[in-house]
Amino acid sequence: MTVAGARLECIHFGPQPADAPCIVMLHEGLGCVGLWGEFPAMLQRETGFGVFVYSRAGYGASDPVPLPRPLTYMHDEARNVLPLLLDAIGFRECILFGHSDGASIAAIHAGDVNDARVRGVCLMAPHFFVEDISIASIAEAKIAYEMTDLRPKLSRWHKNVDCAFRGWSDAWLDPDFRKWNILDSLAKARASVLIVQGREDQYGTLAQIERARDVCAAPFETVILDGVRHSPHREAPQQTLEAVARFARQCLDNERASKERAT
Image (cartoon, rainbow, N blue to C red; front, side):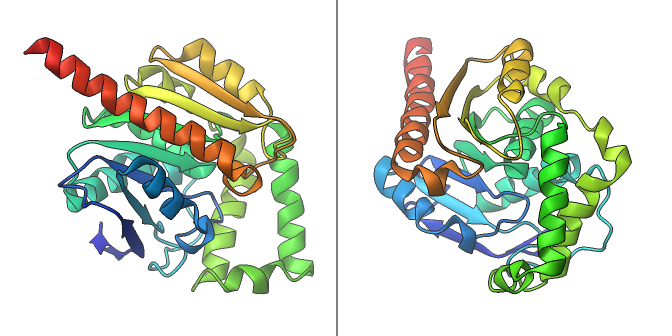
C-alpha cells in the first residue's frame, strides 16, 4: 500500500479492519513486518480480531527515506503518517500496539491526534524520555553494526539496511535528541493505556513507567516481566500474548458496554 507518498510493506491477519476490531502493530526502531515473527498470527488467533502489521518507510521492504532523519521522526510518523494509514485501511475501531519506537509513536498519536476510534494503546518497552542507558545501548549497537555481523544479519530483513539502522541510531545519538520528551503527549491521551516492560530492559528503566503513571490521566495499567529485556514478545511470548490480548478485549468490551448503556 502507498501512504504519504511511500510504498509500505504490510500484512493482515484475520478479519478486515472495516469488518471487525483491529490491532495495528507498530514495530521497534530496528523492526519491520518480518521481525515480529509469529507474534501477529498468535495475537490474531488469541483475540479473534484482525491484526494489521506494516513496516514504516525506511524499514523492511518499504521505500527508503532520506537521511539523516529529523529528530522529530516519531512525532512526524504519529501525527502525519499514521492517521493516513489508519484511514487507508478503513478501520472502525482498533488498538494500537507499539514496541519501543513504535510504542512512542502510538503514545504520541493517542495524545496529539486522539482519534476516538482508537480504543486503547498497548505500549511495549516504550520510551517517553531519553535515559543514559538508552544512549549507551544504542552506542554499543552502532559499534556492533560497524564491527560485527550485525549488519548482514539485519540485511536479511531490511531491503535498505543502512537506511534502517542509521536512520534510527544517528537520530538517537545526536546530542540534541537528549531533549526529546513525549510525556506532554501522553498526558493528553484519553484511550486506555497498557505498558508491558521487561525488568531487565537494556534500553530503558522502570523510571519510564513511573513518570508515565504520574502524568497519564487515562485508565493506566502495567505488566512488568521479571528476567525480560527489551523484547517481551520474543523473550516471554505467552505472558506478553496473554497481557495484550486481555487488554485488547477489555478495551473493546468496555466500549461496547458504554454504547449499550447510552442507548
